[in-house]
Image 1 (tube, rainbow, N blue to C red):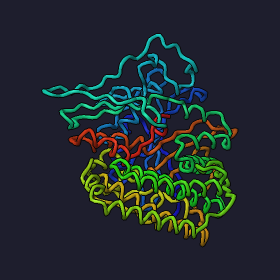
Image 2: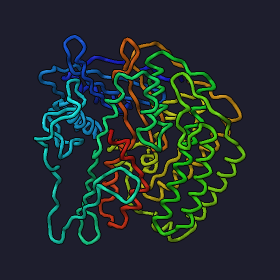
Image 3: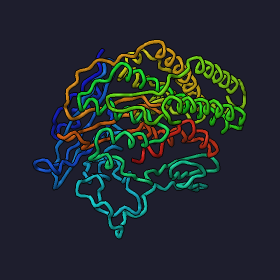
Length: 495
């Protein structure tokens, strides 16, 4: 099985829905929709690229649609793809592209203070707009009835997290509806990539979501290497696989401990933080940075040292003992079990990714499905049919064990790149199974090899809509526990 080169098809807007239906029937899923303002090209049109991916074998197909600049419009695919409908709303908010027939045309990214008619991803957008004609309040849907009241939470929270507003409609303690409102800090990350040299984009990619420096920088690097026709060496591939698993380890143990803390088992949380600190120190020894920044570059990945396999084996045993203690405690298990269930069909319909999807029975893992490394072809994928907090806890505990085993295998041998055809096509896609789930970067280069467009998709973009679904008909005190079991990124979502 070779790593797939991406095949691109130019299609008319009128063909889009039927082509999408056909790809879904063949087992593809929608990975991203990327808007492009080709103002500098002949005709200065808008262009929208739809990336579809499938596994077994790894396949990647793009549909590219050209739009009239004076009246850019697309037919919606929202009725056949829930994630597609959200990508379309993002397109409208950032590019001003009209989406015909969308069932929920309200804005997604745009906030109260954004001026009407200002679309920041357009080539002619002003850097500092006038805010004298704001969009106005977000049109929240009001839930009415006897005893119904609202609980607003955020957007400012008591922690080192980015802003997010949660509006609960409740009766007593029962949640009837939860509406998250995100995108309070539109940082313009994708715009900041434009015009940079490929190596200069690494530091930006590492900071998309601070706890996912490896996942995002690797997805970006793989996309750049495909665009420029660069082959990674065996050593670079092995080092990348090591770093990807080390990032999974320190994040998973932190959340396993935090989940225990949310049900009052603070002792296990303290021990989890002890283990996390050990892993962060290993990270610093390997890369010079506790969050594993600075090692991955297009064409190379260099480590300062090798991880100690014996030390990681000891850590894995330590974590297994902590997990056993947690699941043997009746209060912990009873609070986890049956709480905030996301059913399999719900997870599938919403397009969830990562451990959120796997805890609801969906067998997805980009390491196996879209491998860059031969060791990933047979990586075990842990799933659960239950979809509750307990399932999200146990799936991540199993993934911690698997990651330490994978690291031990990598230390004992080489990891060869999955072979693929390399041509400097000027466009490339990187797909990586970050610790939260599948990360996708799509890169286009200019003829002088600078970045023209970088589209970033963090798994949180797919998973945020699943949180209110899982919380329906639960109680307000379940929110902190459920929220931590999902642990979605504000920063990765709000680019």
